[in-house]
Image (cartoon, rainbow, N blue to C red; front, side, top):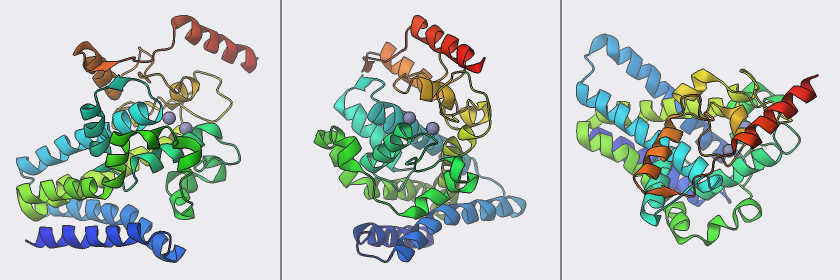
Length: 302
Ligand SMILES: [Zn+2]
Ligand SMILES: [Zn+2]
């Protein structure tokens, strides 16, 4: 019951901020964003503290792991590779399911997320990049969200806004976020909400934020991309393959960011879907294109 009230209060707050976003003073919207970033971190700290006092029930571990995988793939496979970069095609039902899973993890609609991400690719580490460590590491990690600038949907995502499946999830994104909190709360009350909802969102937030910050500051550059994008194996492991970020900037529409050699959980799932006949038009750069890009990098490094 307590968990249901907590979920209701958080959702009512989020719904209020979202509905009145354009009219509310910026400071109120910023406070809402800060709450979404700091709230789960406080929940994570509380969860760590409770581990000293009470045992960790298997059902809570299962909720944390299963929902982390579902929503992590929702962001990486659904929002990023399928929607934003069109790395492959799939059925409308699967597209809707992956986008809904992404909406369960982030307080951003699919189209807003895609618009901001395409803006990042268009201006990587230059003026106009919404989240570059060139403007400060913390800015790239989290501070950029406090700018409260509206996503440039029409400019970057006109094509997506003509897709009825995408717009269905876009309009109902908050409901999916609610479902991501309600399901674990229904399964195991407050503890389910804590581990399967709040801790899960805290871990997802930090690993996905790290793609914007850590992967433009720490790691190796296999390709000369004209920006600061890096391959970082730790972020790659934690963020379902998204940490092979220099590879991604070199070949943005490639479905497999590990480039066939490095572990990429999302890429492996796409490969599995393709073998099952549920994904097609999977984009892969040719060996010649990859070799050309590598050679260009070596030349520019001289
Ligand atoms: Zn990037
Ligand atoms: Zn991208």
